[in-house]
Length: 476
Ligand code: ADP
Ligand code: MG
Ligand code: ZN
Image 1 (tube, rainbow, N blue to C red):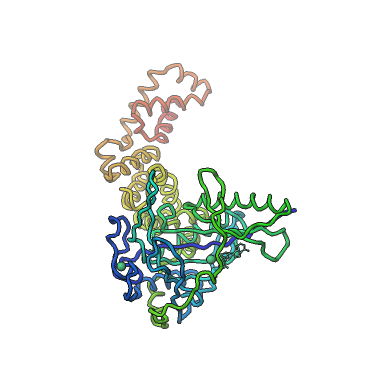
Image 2: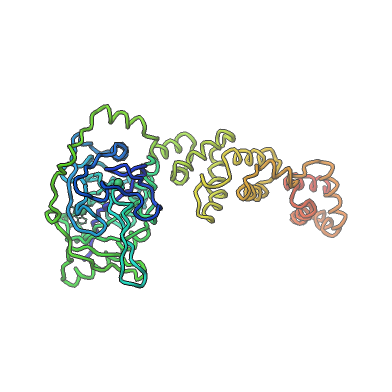
């Protein structure tokens, strides 16, 4: 029997606001433990939460960019559970009326097609603190700096069918929150956290099977590996005539397996009810309109435009729009050197080679669009060869010095002065009488050797095409 996977993702996205969601404590990470706290986020009795407007702005940005319907009236709810790093004993979240519902994100399938993954809901909520467990002794510490930092939870429909699609969906979502500037979208650092729900059903069946929920995956690769493992595990159970338990499982990256963590709670276990300390949030048309005006060109629109306006292939457009900064770099370079395909190639092949080696992003490197355009201009003018340009680019990358200055200082410009070139060619012919004879006897191939000798003598600074021409002339 063949099975099909049904996957739905719940993603928590930490927002890059300055202050927390219900108090004015800083939402920055990295401060000494428990220094970004106040009576509100410490859950002291008698305090009242005040909603941070920025969190709503950010939620609206994401909702509008994911084709969601916005609930003009939405409600905060208390979700009860006990954690040592949740001092109030409940988390303020949204339940029956979230800020946004019924959207979708478009993903590319491996075969080059497109598929819409439905978004069930987006809601706003606060984060809990952090427990830090002692390495060797049975002691845990609690740091409440993160308590009350703002999150968006984005719940997908069970529309995803393969681990690759899950990875693709996450990539599109991360790209989106980064373009919108609402989150770092960094999974390794926990600003994007993903729980994956997965069940299997026989191919052709329309009813869903029982799902397991996977937690503790902090990279795209982990999500994919965990889902692949889970498909194998559930397939084996079902083929054996057994049932999949509804439960929460943890991904153990070191062992490459998922392990049971706890039985799955039901919604009623949380005793959700509307938070009486917060009035329902009302969003009017004017607010939505104001947010719409701030939306940047989104990745998908940019991709389409790059293909149409610059004649790029869709794969290249995909790479160049993978971050807003990279797309801006590309377009800024075009201002100084207007040949899109050449610019695209130099950025994607040569510049990105260095970025990948160092694991940094385009805006973190020393090469500027002006440098890039200048470099391509130098090749175009014949001042340097393409091969030399690669070396120059490496120097620009390492030092931040402009290509022109490097060429000038290191005397790298091509020898294109005709007299010099003629003299060197003659010299090489004199030193290699046998090759000259062979050439004249019809073995035209030896010209390659002679060009090589000229290049050697000029330390690679001669224009090989011109050398070839001069040699033919002299040998003829
Ligand atoms: P729960 O109440 O258990 O958290 P939800 O209905 O809220 O379940 O769904 C949580 C996530 O699980 C959503 O992303 C949803 O798409 C996904 N999901 C729901 N049912 C299934 C299923 N049978 N198989 C796989 N994923 C599912
Ligand atoms: Mg859930
Ligand atoms: Zn606070």
